[in-house]
Amino acid sequence: MKKMHSRELGLVLAQQLLDVEDLHYGLWDGDLELTLGNLAAAQQRYNDMLIAHLPRPDREVRVLDIGCGTGHLLRQLLDRGYRADGVIPAKDLGNAVRQRLADYAGPPPRIFECRLEDLPLEECRRRYDVALFSESFQYVPLSASLPIVQSILKPGGLLLISDFFKTEALGDGASGDRSFGGGHPLREFYASMKRTPFVPVEDEDITRRISPNMELVNDLLMNRMKPAALTVGRYLEGRHPLLARLALALLRKKLDKATYKYFSGHRSKEVFERYKTYRVLLYRLP
Image 1 (cartoon, rainbow, N blue to C red):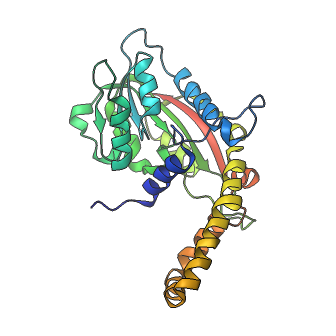
Image 2: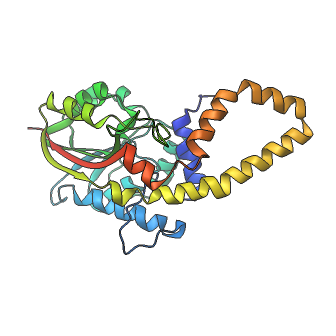
Image 3: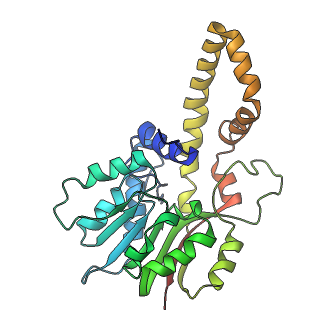
């Protein structure tokens, strides 16, 4: 059995616990009440924002959705007239993508069930008009992603990134420092892009439209998952005290790290805005 990566586990759990179609944050504006019930609407606004950055499919526009999650955005691209393929390294999510596309009547899209680093470049060279990363850019080293994208894009093709990056505040020791993982350092990203032929087209900071998601996440963690975890812990300690103490001793460092990251109240809007900057970035390959 293939070992599941912690990143894959987080995505699969998010889908199962929240019953969502998309595995990215929602886009929150003042007219949408911040409730878990509105999360799907906020996520669809995010999808619509991404699609609005793409060329209109008046002609054939080939899009590679890199890290396509459950295939929800991929299916929307296909239904709106784009020729879209997907990249997904997680087996469970790959199955979800295939199920979502099972009744699609158009030309069958290609689903690359692999890491971007393992994409068959000879098959994909200069094939795509758009390379799209929706909260997946952070998972691929810059040294790998940028050369691959240059290889697969046609001349004049677009690189669209919607993701969060680390700010200069990282490591300042303030409350919540290092409680949020993920994201390339923004300064490092800009420096890497300057060493490529890509021409910047757009760089929009949407952090404050994304950060309200943290209030929902923090409420779920602190008021639902933490009490449930404590209850399970008390049960195991009562039924299997020796085993529970042994497990606690062996996993102390990992448990302390998880407690700090997820169950200390640091998953807040304010902490996110301090240590992350969420950008929509559009570049053109000459």
